[in-house]
Image (tube, rainbow, N blue to C red; front, side):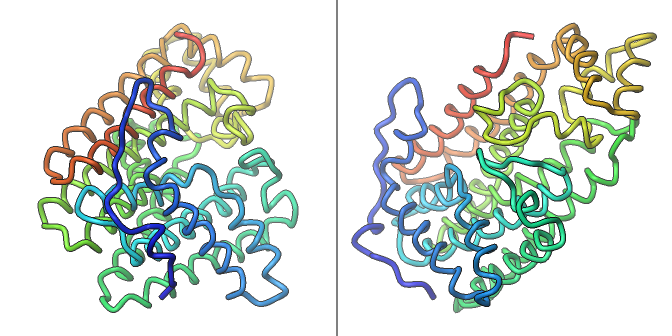
Length: 348
């Protein structure tokens, strides 16, 4: 099990939230924890063969806001205190997440991720796929180091569900019969599941009650689903500067996300034929034809409404948690995502 600077991470976090909800402000109480997680994640590079280490280092150094580790810490604070086991749990979840990103960039043929070339852009698909497999395997190996098998089982089950969600969405590419129900199912699996795992582990490692663990899982699933819908909207209505990754990849790859489903549900006649043609025979020039249809049918506004519904559901889970400090941080995450959603594009 990984060692940690206990003095840097123990104790319950106190969050003094102001308006607006700034990311930096939300995570200030757990920043020492996040730094230790980042350090421990970097140390995992030494577990790989020296010939593979450069690829692993590139993948593991591509962390963003460390949202999932933050969820581990805030959920721990909402059910007790942060301790060393939470460090290892956060490293494991983040490694699984980074492995999925390596594979996603291959599937999506993305050139950029977090403002820099993807692993696949630098070294090709074959190395990227195999490196992602190595990261998954190493994460499970770390999970097996816990004295209880429950952690390893939970990580393995969540990883399976994440990959299954990606398969479901990929299998339905360019399928014009793809429904909202199928979309939400895939989104909950591929993104919501790791959010839920992060929250659950934060509570489980504190001996949280079954009621608290259920509440944390509901919170994570709802927040993660909202986050993925936001990310799907960002792909259509954002900018590469803000997103730090290639945009327009979903439509280019035939992935039907919520804004596009809104148009397909409402468009008829020539409009329907136009967007169907664009999806089935995609070319970069088609984006100029799709964008007005998104605006006419209020796709962004309607998608924002769905995101707010999921965020409200996440907030409804919080009263079941006992520690007000951690609850405040989790609530802050929902408000932060709501603000980010409102800042997307124009009011189309």
